[in-house]
Image (tube, rainbow, N blue to C red; front, side, top):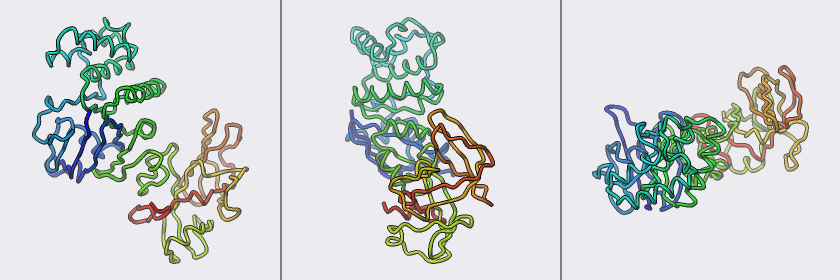
Length: 368
């Protein structure tokens, strides 16, 4: 096991900068997730750590050893790819053992590790099968088993669950978390799926356009996003964003007025005519039954229902403000009956309001 330190890592491809000024330190034994939209640089960071890419500038340490000029095969890391990369002509046992054989581990130790790893991943009954005889989830576990058998100081996982169906992805995600708790090996996991990031990570690194947007524990980032990109990327359904103009006595949102929470008035220097983006998460919008701790007045908007998506225990409503094409996501109980075209009043819990700079996207409220 080892800590990982990146200092001002930059990677350029000709005239294109893939990652810029990437700096963070992962303590020994922690599970970190790199998350962001496609093209944000997360896989480039992972491949640079693995030694499959070379940093244009900056320093990379695994443990206390500078790795910039160390080839991939000497870094003692194990990487699991999105496409599994299993050898089709080998059995499950042979695939798991392959890395150990390449390192010339004695045969007795190899057999012991293969059996141990197969048992931990529920693969012991599949050891004689070949990859084409396995399901996608079983192939994924074999790829994980091959990495675990090596007992590396660092695990690198590049979107390993993206090819699985929804139920299998949920099951395998839980297995991954349990395995990490048992093995305690430093792990870096790349995904664009914010649910995977929130559920797996000790800490999340949110990336966009090759730069770090925010680093922190999942719930802390969810509650205190640094900017609009982070706020809208983490959360399912995503945060609602409303364009608003400060009018002196409140925020004008498509001709409707929202009062200003007292904390906002005390912490922001607002001038009439200023434009802002207001954020509110779906779980903080209510119909019929307002929240117990809401402000009594000033958080009401009239909307028109556009789409109704029953999900069983709850229903997702997508509704628009009059004269606006922006749809608000609202979560209501599964027993609520609404139809497209219905008009209704929403009660926003203004104590849960976010305010973003309309030009930079930086979070102005709540304060970080």
